[in-house]
Image (cartoon, rainbow, N blue to C red; front, side, top):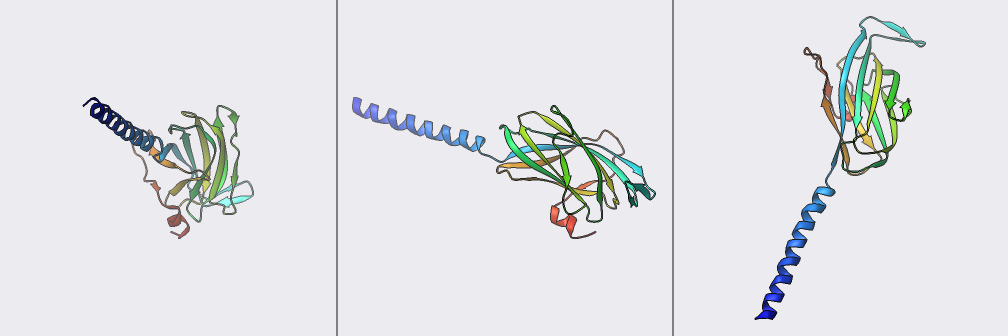
Length: 179
């Protein structure tokens, strides 16, 4: 009888431990959400404007904050902001605890996309991104995370203006398909 009790206790303890480990691993390995908060937008000019050797039909500013809300420290992540196919990223500035313009941004071969590589992005850290976009028509954009597995950018609209204009987060393929 005592052998039976010993066998049952080992089996039930092992089963309970396996079930517990399954739920812990499931929580730990789920897709992590990296928040991209949309803080502000402003129309700088509705009229054609010359800006650094280029003329744009209009010029808009947008301010985002990327926050590591995951449960991991990220060694390196590439964040890509994409806008409508006719748009042009005219200017970008970043702010982080490391300083101004760290991480450094650069424009892809397409003028409507801008990427930032963030290194050593620890939990709860923030990076602010200020962008000036020319030739905006429908105010559509996309935020994509690249070169990292298990992390997905989550769009959160935190603009304070009570009369928010309609801005749409869309799939990247919809931006490049044209208007």
